[in-house]
Image 1 (spheres, rainbow, N blue to C red):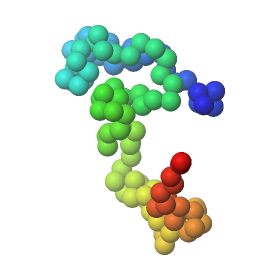
Image 2 (image 1 turned 180 degrees about the vertical axis):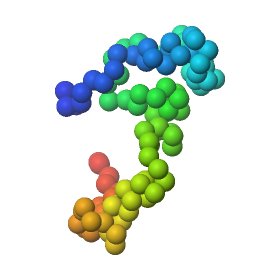
Image 3 (image 1 turned 90 degrees about the vertical axis):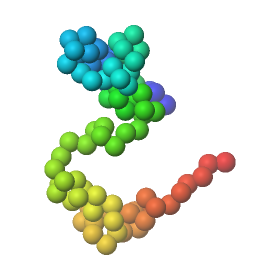
Length: 99
């Protein structure tokens, strides 16, 4: 599956450098610069705080105002969307199970 995902970064050099400079608070999560990723980041979250929290964190990847975020969220609700068919929105509430 990696063939379909663009590799996006070679390690987290930027965050590692910020820790070494004493500018970042990430050390509490990452445990110091010895735990920074150095390999190519491919299909993983960039943010090291989110990465060390298992790849999921509410703060990672959301850069907007509350109003604009609300407008985007409405696009996933069948009664409010102007981008998707209501049936498509309903699929977001469906659990697909693979056997």
